[in-house]
Length: 276
Ligand SMILES: Cc1cc2nc3c(=O)[nH]c(=O)nc-3n(C[C@H](O)[C@H](O)[C@H](O)COP(=O)(O)OP(=O)(O)OC[C@H]3O[C@@H](n4cnc5c(N)ncnc54)[C@H](O)[C@@H]3O)c2cc1C
Image 1 (cartoon, rainbow, N blue to C red):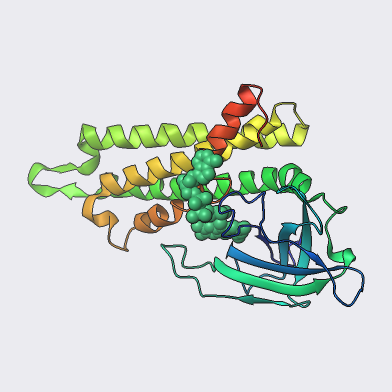
Image 2 (image 1 turned 90 degrees about the vertical axis):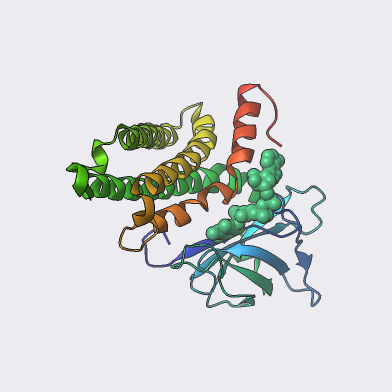
């Protein structure tokens, strides 16, 4: 996966704990034939690249785990099998992806567990969260950047012939572009700063990880909304890429941890409270 040869994905979310991905309700069982390893039975509500990925990182409560966060992660390969995609992707936008529900029901050897037994929660928080937040924030801002650039191009060229002017000559249009552009630029720097904090192992890296995804996701909502506004009816037509970015950008804030949860975590960290 690190060399880019295999496509990996996360199978964390479950219907029972919804966006609280750190608390799977499925639970691994000892295998009835007494062999080593466990029986992994889990219904996952959303898995990006379902049916297309080479590796599925699947979370589940550990055998005998008594708290919601006593969890394990298993790397289930496509070759290993033991899973099915329960339904096709049918959602708003994101037509190039396949975020479908999946069912895993398979015996897995201990060797497929990532880390020691019960270490799933720590890996989710310490390894997955920083990478996921950076990647998600970057994609969400890339969508916003694409929408803003298309909007600037459109308002700079679209003419009001009877007035011999362009849309960009309207101060209200420029005000929206200015607001969107500055919010976007600030958030791009926030993501860079977060990457530097993670790379340096800074004490406040977690605060940045929690804040950057939430802020970037909300910035993308605002920027793509402004891009739709300033382009008017043209934004709805497919000759501009704005409507696509507008639709796709809406997924970022619900991809767990959701923005609202992140704001709460961020505040808890600032106030010296436990996150969980
Ligand atoms: C396109 C797409 C792709 C996805 N891909 C994957 C994937 O690859 N792997 C995976 O594991 N999951 C994936 N997910 C699932 C995602 O991470 C979330 O788990 C899921 O979208 C949450 O939806 P829900 O309806 O269960 O939200 P709910 O948990 O029902 O949340 C509803 C609302 O309540 C708010 N809320 C909930 N709890 C709190 C709280 N404690 N404090 C404040 N607000 C709260 C939320 O912020 C949200 O606004 C994907 C989702 C989407 C949309």
